[in-house]
Length: 260
Image (cartoon, rainbow, N blue to C red; front, side, top):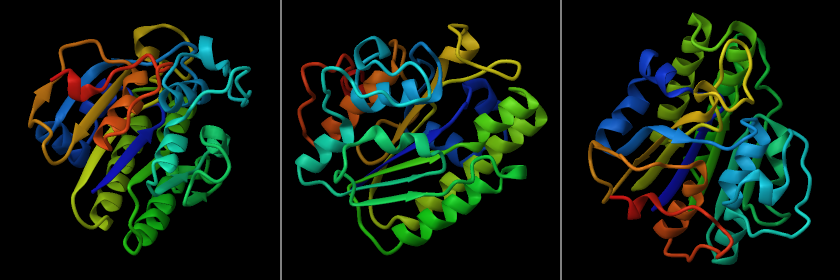
């Protein structure tokens, strides 16, 4: 069984619900979810992703801008732990700053396209085509897909603008295309790194800090809304539990599967 994690940059939960996004909304109805999950401060792309993959807040990992800074005290990351356990991992992204989420050699496949800033959001569909073509013929245990244009649309046109909602629709189609290419059973996680307001983000406002988290797949309850407080740091422990791998003691999150 494959586990696939989609991070749609800058996706606000209320934007998701207003947009035409039938694929992701079907994952909500068929799985467990919350539209009130909380990211970390600063609510900026790289610090939020490092918190997701390393299971701790920026106060511990030390990344507070979109420039990578190695932790003074090294931390075990999600992809590294999966690789050490013999799992095959793949990553598809269109924002290069994410390259340090794992140590060299931890990924079995890595694809980067410098296209998240392409006009009219053509980059995400191009990346989705690359991912779906590759995944149709290759089996991986863990797949990470990052789609960057929703955030770009927020900065260019404003969060909750018509162009922003159209970008969410495009991302939804990308998710659907990639999922259709993966054979066999799969567990799907969809989330975001942060939200946004006006044409920016990075503050502790609810618009910036609130993100969706959706989990769907075999043995996952249908239509369950998580009432407990869920943090972005809960995602890595959830993925490790799916693979029956213990979480490091330093990680602060807990598996969503223990919240049912």
